[in-house]
Amino acid sequence: MPRPITLVSGNARHRRCELVQSLARSLGIELLFLPSYSPKLNLIERPWEFLRKGCLASRPLADHETFAPTVGDCPNHLQTKYQEQMKTLLTLNFQTYEDEPVLAA
Image: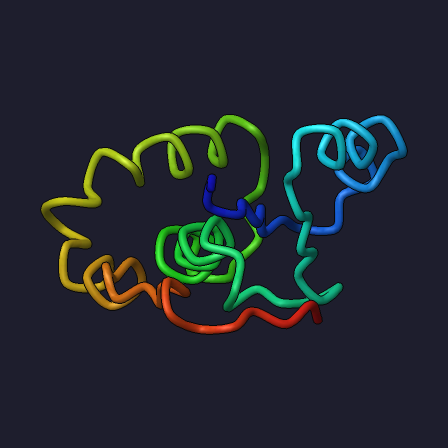
């Protein structure tokens, strides 16, 4: 018997549309949507938060000519200058549900 598949996703409109939901049902995939505002559960929010707080230092930049190199250069230093911060943001400690019952939120 195949193992059940649960896809955990954010709440973007294109992910909740009937086309996506009907395709998931036809493939036997359960869609589990994260709560509306859950930045700690959505992994992509962690690097974005770091970019805003770490690289941009939560400060507005005057123009595109200042903004672009500041944002563009940040990923180049993730494994050097920002290595310690990245270790705390992106850990490999994920919970698995192999022997756990999963309840829809």
